[in-house]
Image (cartoon, rainbow, N blue to C red; front, side, top):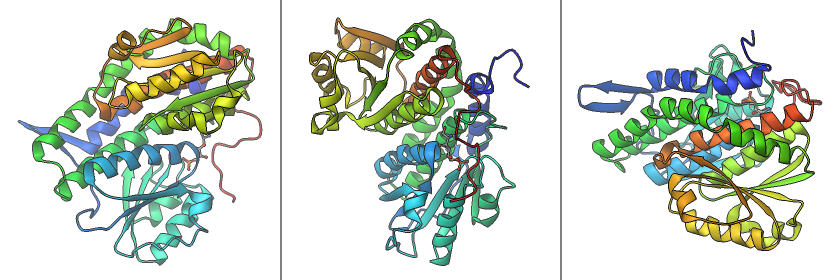
Length: 364
Ligand code: M6R
């Protein structure tokens, strides 16, 4: 039932404050003065972590790689499952491996899980469906509580995957002694702010998103750029847009612009810059200026601090509240999802059932 919404995708985007809160309720705990994560694998002595997934779930894993490496000092080997399973990666058997899948049935992800199990790795499944093959076969299951996701484009599963992965990274940091209890508490406390911020953002960005979608719906190509965790998010933005609007879109690391894609930029090419005011902000802005100097139409998605710090005439800006670094990917995912959604609706596309795609990919 779509309720008051026109499409499942729209409904699922707006469900995020609620489902993310549910995921947080399971993966974190607050008692008295303490705030902790509740799910963990045996991360303490392991040399590395492998992550395998497809599509949007893979991009959630790529964001998690930044977290595991930064907070837990745990090296992460990540690849799309269709490559992972055949790469003959020399995985140390003492390592752990995570498999991320909304459906829990994706053929390549399941094959990657079997590959790692056969090599003696401890396996964990980050899944929406606990009755799925991937959940059944993994040693540990980390449910994401997104509820049924009907739209082929993954939205709420993505942010709920990020919740589970963020808590696992914080748990790993505690287990490995790379974060103090207070540091972990600060991170968990930031995560707890997410549902409230999401609710406010979903209300506040609507006019901007609808306006910009009108522009995007006339374009043939769109480039998304970002640094740090905003880089996988740029790829997620491009995936979402191409999947439901059929507009060609690419997500790039901002620093890669001048290594190729800058050649594409002209006045017909919107460049969507994902730039919270974090430690990468100045660098991303200078990449943005390179694109603006070539006539590129810049759409900047930033926060209040970033908007105050970067004034470019040729620019549309979507301004989000300033949030802690660990929740920025989940908050910045919202305008990206809504831009894709409204653009596809304006173009008259079947957003819930895009051509050529299936919700669950159970064949190779
Ligand atoms: O069920 P899974 O999470 O394993 O599915 C993985 C991908 O097929 C999926 O995320 C796909 O990329 C989405 N349609 C993207 O919106």
